Amino acid sequence: MDTHARFSLVLSTVMVILQARAVDMVVTRTLDIGYTLSEESANWPTNRAIEFTSTMKGLTPEGFWLEANNICMAEHSSTHLDAPSHFSEGAWSVDRIPLNHLMAPGVVMDIQEKAAKDSLAELTAEDVMAWLDKHGPLPDRAIVLVRTGWASRYDNKTAYFGTDTKDTSKLVFPGINVGAARIFSGYEEKYGRRVVGVGLDTPSQDNGASTHYPTHVELAAAGIYGLENLADMSELPTTGFKLMVMPMNIKGGSGAPARVIAIIPDPDGDLSSGPPTPPLGRLL
Image 1 (cartoon, rainbow, N blue to C red):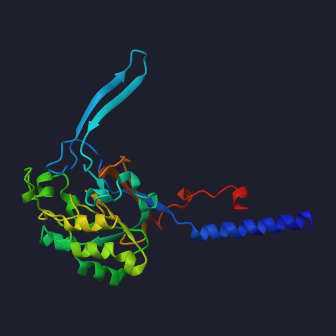
Image 2 (image 1 turned 180 degrees about the vertical axis):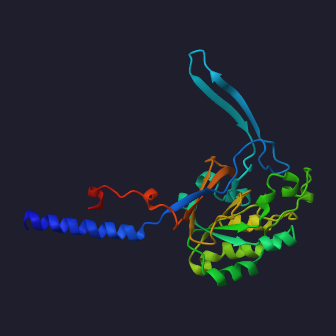
Image 3 (image 1 turned 90 degrees about the horizontal axis):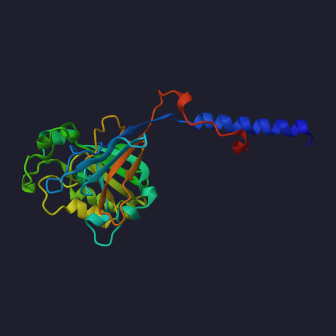
């Protein structure tokens, strides 16, 4: 094959690849659905209060700026991940959760109407089945988010927890019924696809009235982690987005504060800000 023919073949191949990339390219935007960690963060009533103290903030004698702080807190503070080991002996601790369980597709199941009428409302098995009938099967390695609307109360801790005391018998907030949890824990056996995480915008996966935490126990035994104290989910679509869950990588931790980022398709976004085209050599 002469040089001209080789060049024509290479050019044609590049054009095909570029056209394919243009079709496949999806502009996305990112959304943080967690809270910043501070002394004002939501904290389980019996947990140690979060302490944030400055050890240095200013110019050093050598003339450069230096800031350093100490922080002391419970594992389950602010927006955080509950590792399976939190409620299941010998299960994964935070540092043992597979990375592909922390970067996975997300879905939202909305029970705001129920929660507005009943502060102890739960996502039930019937709610989950109705969602599946309407939206189809869960994607493999799904992270299921439950939107209760409780995030709107986050800045008022009495309204958020249902009490201004440390008495956990007075807690009032929505949660997830153990019947729904059993669908998630048994999903892989029945459908060949597994649920890896379940999260919601309240202080706990079990509602405030729970004393034996059956939803925690059911999910933890199946290796499903929990996400608690998530922020407002109103900008999330019901399906079709990805989640990045980034907990502190605590060795042996039963939980850890986490940053939770949603990656959402944005068809009205600017293509110029989309992913760059690889160099020609990589395309070939």
